[in-house]
Image 1 (cartoon, one colour):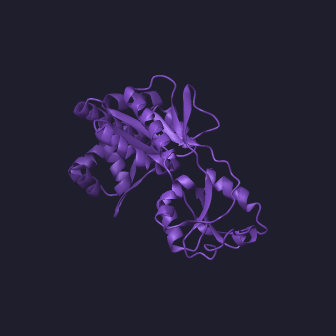
Image 2: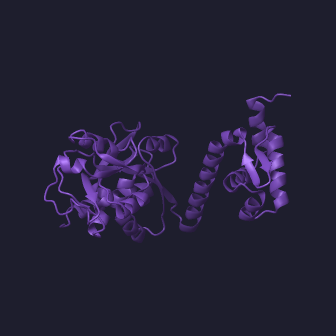
Image 3: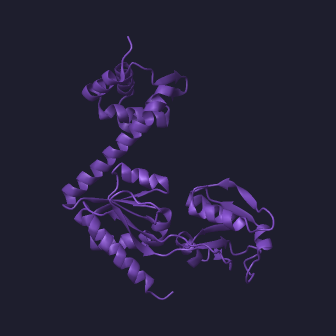
Length: 317
C-alpha cells in the first residue's frame, strides 16, 4: 500500500527518535554497522534493529548490505540534508543550553567569512573571551550566498563579513576595517626581488586560483584580462586556506588574495607581497546585525569588535 507524505510525516513525529538520526548519519559516514555501533556506544544488534525499525517506519530501504559493510540507497541520500541539519540544530541547542545553565549568559552565534576571521576575529575573540569568559561564542564560517542562507534560517545572531550589495531585510552593516588585494608568493620566487613586475612578467608566472564566486577570483580575472598573454594556472582550485598556504609554500606560484587573509603569513616572512598595483576596491569588513531583536550578549560583542577595530586601526604599522 502506498503511503503519502502526510502519513510519513505523522509517523516520524509520533514514532521517530533522535537516535534514529544519529544511527543513520553514523552508518552513512562509517559504512559499517560495527564501526557505527562502536562510535555511538551501542551494540551491533541495537544498530541493526534501529535501522530495521527506521526502514519499516519509512517503508523504504535505506542501505544496501554487502560484504564490506553498508552503502546508502538513493532514498537514504534524499534524507541526508534534513538529517544533518537536524543534528546540527540539536548540537547547537545543546551547546546554548549548557552555556546558559553553567554560565548564566548563554551563547552568541557568530557567522564569519575567512577574511573576517583572519582580519580581525583571530585577535579580537581571545581578547573578548578574557573580558566576558562567561559567554560562549559559537563561530561558523561561511562565504557568499551561504551567509544569506544561514541568516534566513535564523541560525546566527550576528555576522562579521565583507559588505554585501544587498542586506537581509531588517539587518544593517557597520564597517570595521578596510581591505585590499595583494599579489603574494614565496620568498624565493623569481619576481621576489623585482621592484615592480610588469604585466608581461606576471603573465609568465603560474597562478593559484580561488573558486569562482569569490572576490579573489573575480579580481584575478579582471587583472588577468590586462595580461598580454593568458597566464598559466595551477591545476588545483580551492577555497581551503590550509591547502592554499601549503601549495604556496611547496610550489613556485603566485596568488591574488585579500590582505586580511595573508597578513599573518607576510608578517611571519612565509610569503612576500609583490609590488603590483592592483587597482581594486574591496568592500570593507564589518558587522552585519539585526536592526532590532538583538540580545545583550551579541550587542556587547558588537560594541567590543567596533572598539577593537578602531584601536587596531590607530596602532602604528
